[in-house]
Image (tube, rainbow, N blue to C red; front, side):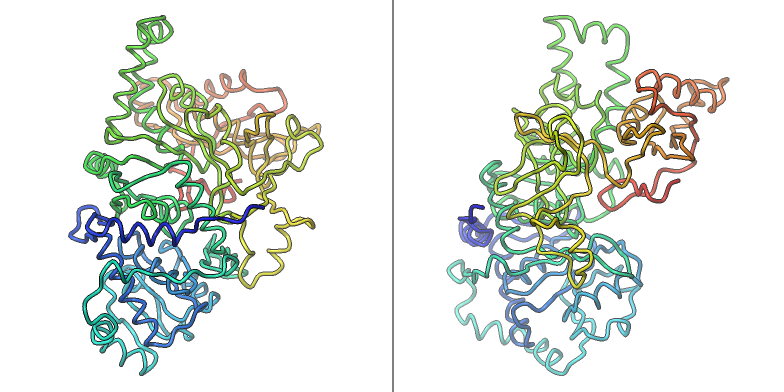
Length: 551
C-alpha cells in the first residue's frame, strides 16, 4: 500500500501561513469569528498551557460540546500538540459521558455549557481538570499545577513569543503515521464501549484524497452542519476545509428549516454534505408536487422543451442551497430512486458516497460527472474493497475494506477489534453489496438488518423502504419481520392526508399504498401489512434511523 506522501499537517501549516488574514471559522448568528492567523494563535496558546501543566504526547484530551468554532480550535490544538483527541457526542446521556471520559483515560475535559450543567465532575476522578470548550475558562482544577499555570497562562505565552506570534512561528511537529490521533466513540454504550482509534495515517490519507480530488481554497465558503464529534463532520467539514483555506461557518444550533435556509442563503457554500432524508423532504414538499402535474410530466419527456423544465427545477434547487453549490455529497443511507434519477436528469452536481467512522471516514466516492446511479462510487485512493462472495459482481456479500484509512482498532476492546477483522487483515463493514466490472460499489443493506425469506431468500428492508418512502403521504418507514411476515411501519403526513382525502380513513390510504408497493416487489418480499406510527423514528446524530428499536 502506497505511503501517504503529503500529510494533513503539511496542508494545514501552509494554509495557516498563506491565509493569515483570511476568515477561517465563525459561528452563524454569533460574534465568534477567527481568521487563519487568529486560529494559529489560539492553537499556540493552548500548546503553551498543555506544556506548562505537564501534558505529554499521547495523553488524551476529551471534547464534549455542541458544534462551534472553538470545538474545532480545541481539536486542532490537541492533535497538533501530539495529544489524542477524544470525541464524545454532546447528545449522549450523562452517565455515558462520565463512562466514556473515564474509559478513554482523558487527562483534560473540554466541555460545552449544556454538558457542563448536567455532568458530575466527581464521576470523572482521573481528570486533571475541566475547561470550557467555548471560552477556555477553567471550570475545575484537580491539581495545584493546573490552577497555578492557568493563572499565569498569559505570562507564559508572552515569554515564549516576546515579539508576538507571527506566521513564521507556525511550525508543527510531524508524528509517527501509525500513532493514534483520535478516539471516536460510535455509541454512548456504558458497557463495552467501542472507541474507534484512528491514526495519523488515516487522517492524512483522507485529507490527501479530498485535496487532490476536490481541491478548495480561500475563495470557498462552507456551512458546517454535521456533528464535529462524528468523522464526516470533523474530517470533511473541518479538517479538509482548513487544509485548503476555506472559510467555514458553523451552524451552532439545531436548525429549523427557516434557519437552515437563511444560513445557506447567507453562506452560499461551495459544498454540502447531507443525508438522503433532507434531500427527499425537499423533493416531496417542493419538487415532486410540481413535476408530477400531468402537463409538466408530459413536457418533462418532450424533446427540446424538456430542457427548459429541467433548468427551472435545477435553478430552484440551486437557489435553495445558496446558489454557489459545486458539490452535493449524499451519504448515510440509500437515496430514493426517483429523487436520484431526477437529480441526474437535471444534471445537478450530486454524488452518493460511502464511509464509516472506522475508516476515518472515506471508503468510496466518485465525482458527480462520472457517478453511476444506484452506486456509491469507487474505492478511494489507498483503500481496497472486497466482496465476501464467490461472485462479487452478481452475488451479494459483506463489504470488506483494507488500506490506509482503516482504524487501528477499538480502544481497550480487543474482543470487538478481533471480531471486526478477518484473519488476513481486512475489516468487516457489516454492510452488504456488490462491485460491478467498472469498480462501482452498490450497497444492498446492512448484514444485521437483512431478513431471511421463507425459502432462504435474502431480503434487504432498505430496498423495500425506498419504494414505500416514494409513495404519497409517506415521510419515512421501517420494514420489520414478524414471524416470517413483512410489516412496514410508516410515519405519514396525516395532516396532508386528512386535508386532501377528508373522507378516506388513513388505514385505507395505507392499504392502497401497500398494494401499489407490492406490485413493484418480488413475491417473496411483499408487505403483509402497514402500521402507522404517531411520531418520526428515533435517529442517530447523523440522521440514520435506529432500526434496532423497532420490531
